[in-house]
Length: 185
Image 1 (cartoon, rainbow, N blue to C red):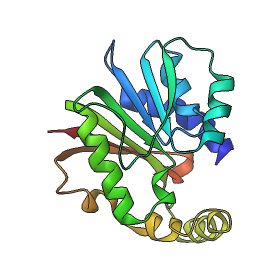
Image 2 (image 1 turned 120 degrees about the horizontal axis):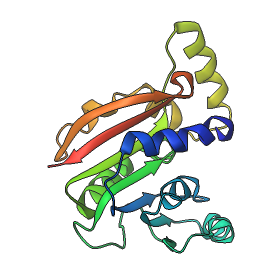
Image 3 (image 1 turned 180 degrees about the vertical axis):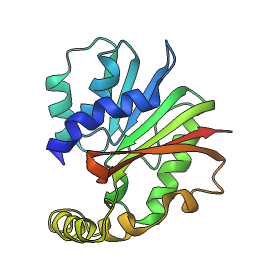
Image 4 (image 1 turned 45 degrees about the vertical axis):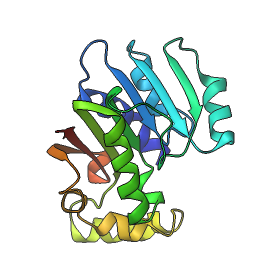
């Protein structure tokens, strides 16, 4: 997804449209690409990941004073309640079973301020039966065992009773990526 992800990082920022001075959490930050997209615009950003190796890469590439990386489990975020204006996760949900996804979303909700935004970015099936078929089988070759179930599920329906208000979504990378926006109520 690296080729598509470059443009997606900017689209995520635009779709999120954080208010000036917003504190942003990037969950499952990996090498920090989404965190960098927020930090380069002057926002205070914390990137959290469980992988020490990924965080080393992120730290090495970090040239921002307003961005720090922390090791932590997305299912038990080491953050205060109601602290962040925006909590974002990019390309991490398809790596998890549904029980873990719910736990991560609940944790992201806990650390996000009321009326704060949750941004979820991940794979989706593109429009068109043939295109969808080939995309699904190609990506399935290199993605986790959870990808097939994730990409075929209705995330909006699964997150209905989580204390989040669905604000909408937009597509990216020709429909191969979806960006969901929720508000904590």
